[in-house]
Structures are given as structure tokens and as C-alpha cells.
Image (cartoon, rainbow, N blue to C red):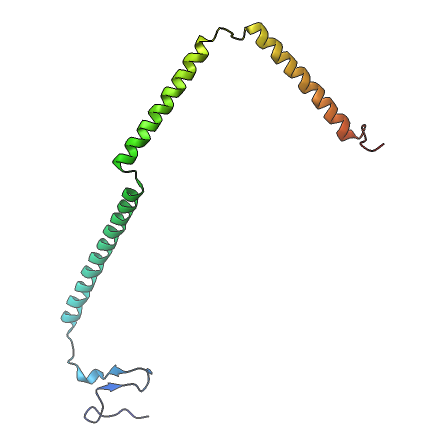
Length: 138
């Protein structure tokens, strides 16, 4: 198909691209200096957009951090709750320290020896069962 001369052409063409596009002959030719200045403006605006996007991401992160943090009244309630819990533990510790019946080192050693003996017996029984020496259904 032959190109249509500019004086007969409509304002838009859709011959090869499949969508309306302007005829290039309608526009003045642009000098190289103008193109370079436009390119410089594009680079400057692109840098500005990237800076603004980075600033926006930083502010969004800061906003997320602030919204997830506790407010002052919530923090005060948390501190009061922790103080009450600490006071309860202090009272409990004071009661334990004041208790007259404490475990002597000899009693502690005896309990430790008994625990070791029971563990040895348990291991021995476990080994017997796993080796098949003991059957559940005779």
C-alpha cells in the first residue's frame, strides 16, 4: 500500500501499527540541541522521581514502625503490670528464704543418687524390652 500524501492524509493514521498514531509530517523537525536538552530534563526528572520514591519508602517504613509501637498509656500499663509481677516474685522469694525447712547437702546428694539408680534401672529395662527378652503376649 502506497503512503498517502500529507495534504490528503487524515490527522491520524492506523495503517501499519494497528492503532491511531499521528503523521510525523505534521510536526516540525527538532534540532539536536533541543533533543539533548529534553534528554537532560528527562534524566533530571528521573533522578528526582527516584529520590522521591526512596523518600516515600523511608517514610512508609517509619510510619509502619510508629504504628506498631505501643502508645504512652499502653506502655505505662505494661510497666505497671511488670512492676506488680516483680513485686509478686519478690514476695515469693522472701517467703522461700524465710522458710525453716531447707534441703541439706546430704539430703540433696541422697536424692541425686536415688535418681541415678532409677535411671540405670529404667535404661536396663528399656534395653531388655528392645532386645526382645520381654514379650507382652506370651
